Image 1 (cartoon, rainbow, N blue to C red):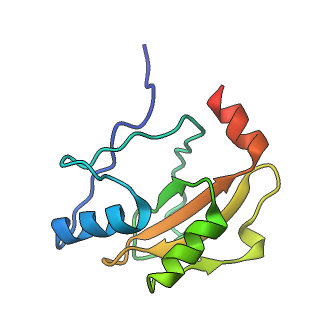
Image 2 (cartoon, rainbow, N blue to C red):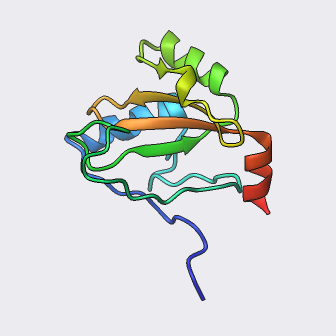
Length: 125
């Protein structure tokens, strides 16, 4: 008995159809009519942060973190689509992985995470 994974992520949007289309077009997330997609096995982090954290924007109560397999390629594609991508070498953590950040059209923060191979393999066991 227990939780076996994240079953969904639900949030409010000003224009749900347009936002869903943006996620499908740029991140390949939620392409079926109900917004689901098959994910690869790997680590998922569930981590409440202090109310005064500066890890993500103070006006947002959450930040979506998406695991990716080619951070450089995805960042290049996003930039080509006119999406602002923030990177910082200080965000990269040996043994954890590399990170980039974007915002969806409604300003919701998204962190893109390419796990280190050791992290990804340990999480898949």
